[in-house]
Amino acid sequence: MATRLGMLRFSPQVFWSMTPCELEAVLRGALGDASCLSNSFASSLTRAFTDASVKGRDLSDVLKSLALSLSQSKLEAALVPISQAFGNSLRQRARTAASTAPFATVGL
Image (cartoon, rainbow, N blue to C red; front, side, top):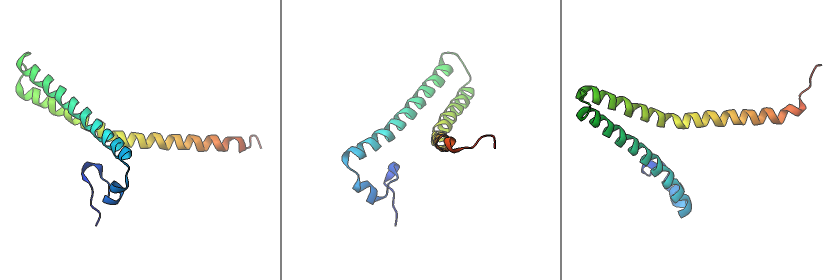
């Protein structure tokens, strides 16, 4: 039975085999991402209610704008692993091409 330990998504065996320094690094990364997202949410919420109260915008328009902003930030966060994987794939292909280039024959 493979259980996961919360947001870390580690099996118990992996979790308990980690050193305190490794665990701290993983937690800092996970909490940093959460902190960034919460700051984005807070600024979007503040901006939305400022628009509603100070600028006199309609509350439904403000809430639509807030929902769009939140969905955009969530999408950007979700695409980070995909873009990193794509970048890693391109780097690996470039390394492979560079390592085989000296052995290529030209003009035969």
